[in-house]
Image (cartoon, rainbow, N blue to C red):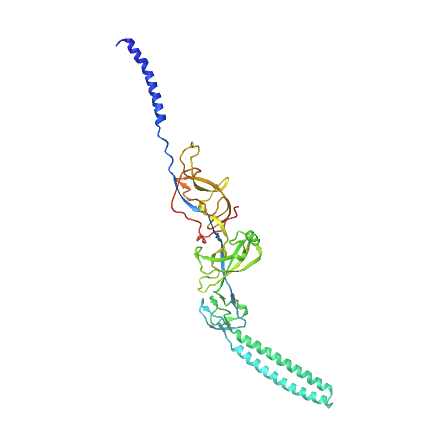
Amino acid sequence: MPLKRLKSIFVLIPAIIVALAVLAALSGLFWQTPPVPPSPQKVVLVEAVETEAFSTYEIIGVLEADQKVDLMARVTGFLVGLQFEEGDAVKAGQVLFNIEPDQYLAAQASAEAALLSAKADFTKAELDFNRAKDLYLKRASPKSDFDAAQAALDVARAKVMTAEASLSQAKLNLGYAEIKAPFDGHVSDTPFSEGSLLSPESGALATVVSQDPVLVNFGVSDKYMAATRLGDGPLPGQRLDNLEVRLKINGSTPYPEPGELVYVAPLVDRATDTIKMKARFANPQGILSPNQSVTVSLTAKTPPKALLVPKSAVMTSSQGSFVFQAVMGKAAGAPEGSPEFLQAKVAYLKLGREYDNGYEVLEGLKAGDKVVGLGLMSSGSMLREGAPVEIMDETPQPQAGPAQAGGQSGPNRG
């Protein structure tokens, strides 16, 4: 091949390569596959509803007997009878201890005899007085005899009264030889046995405590109480007269009977900054025992109504609380004519109180609006403004009933 022709070929090769590169670039411009949009995030919508707003305030309380008494000996004598088994249920008026009654029976008999003697003396003094009076009125005896008869009658009357009082005391002492249960309840153990010498200095013989009803003691923050007394406190129901008191045993088992608030202390306990309260509970089956620790749950007798959104739907940023709504729209910066798709949109809210069954919405939503309640997180990433979403069928709403797992109601977030 001639040298000149070879040189021409080598000169053309770079030009051909450049041309091919340009053609490849132009081909890519016109035939490039459009980018694949990200997969939509699956979400569940929940509805903002106007419903009863339930909240629970829980504190630890301690049960105490509605009635409790230490049985004491009021007379001295030997214990001759124990009429109960320790821990027994007892009835009001049931005899529990017998103190040897012989000396008190004798004292009663002596007092009865003394009363009879005093009455006899009174009868004689009354007869003498009547005779002296008759003679004095007839001017047959001096007034001094009449006065003496009058004085003797008064002394005899006083002796009768003294004898009657002594007999009453003797009867009381004899009655004290039987120590009885003052009310229905259960009796404790006793450190005494038959043959023990009892006296008022012996101390408590046993303790009787009532079982039905029982009281529960608990304390509420003085700040909460101050706001509640103003009619807009954070306690459920926002007023003391709208509080319902319930109990949980072992922290989780609900006690079936509601309680009645019976006492609110007039003073703040400075050691705990709380105000002591008491509630009374019926205890017909004896489930509750004095000194038992329980969880006190305060709820509202008549819950307020509010526009609520489920707690799972609410997020918080530096700009405030917000939720995501699912709306049709185009991708950010998409040219005119681009297709619309279902995407997440931020809606900022003004919230009120936190209740067990949702947040109170003051501004930003109306009843019936639907927001993302489940699906805010996917593969460790938070749902973002404008992200495509796919709605699932399930649409849970704020519960129209008390939450099963109660807790202290949240502060006002408005």
